Image (tube, rainbow, N blue to C red):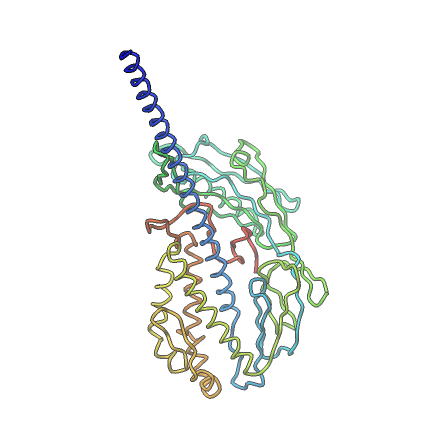
Length: 427
């Protein structure tokens, strides 16, 4: 009887240990799964923040870039253009513009035909064999015979980037209507560890070739192999975007355009198209000093909103964005104060009761302080342009505070060049 009871106890203890081990294994697996899911959630949040950052920076830049103080110092001659949706259109009017309202509907932006190669690790020796590779560039039915040589001899054999650069040079010199260039960026990778945690692996530089027509509308091209299979292997001949002219309605009149910057009113009104519209956007040209004042208030408000957004998203966006802007503005804070703009310690700007009188009585000083060579708006606009050149991924943060450089996020801030829509657009 004792033997049976002892055996039963031993069995129960063993069964309990087995269930404990199973539960522990399930717990570890679930913990790893949720950790993995949490890492991906952080990555999505960062990507979303970077996309919003790119959109806000692009829109703010366009607003600054399109603004000019009216020429002269006579308010009756001032003209100011405003839009009902600054995410769709930026507008600018000269002193000769008519005071009027326009309805603008953008059905299609002007885009170029684009072909992009596969992405290759930049510094790896090319897999292509040594020799001459001939191919044909066809532009609007006209053939251009081109070739490049691959050299794998000696201590410096051609790398993937070398091959792409040779192709870019050959294609770009085939005809002036075609542009070809190599883009190099950094790619971050992740691996799953045995404990299901996510670990970042070292960066590697990767390159790809872009071929496109120099302007939108009217030019189509293709690439094909003659000897070898370089074009086919690199997948260059598949278009990622087709060439097409833009289409828009100005007061119900349909027009086409090969650029995304158009004029109206005999050139006195300039509009830059940023995105297509579901409903018409109102473009209003006003005269006098009051519209200028309203525009300046709006731009200061946009600046403050931008700074506040950076504060709210400091866990995703590197602090160098805000500090870089502040370092540009601090040296002119006294000038701003003299025209009624108070530069605050947090980076925002307050409009004081001195501003309106200064605008009326000291227009020249206000102009110089805001839009002169060292003006407030001029400095901020230059900083935004610098960020675009650097690429938005430079300013993203992972949770440990390090710079985020994953390939695939938005890499340029301005839709007129390579925007958040992924299109190469021409202004």
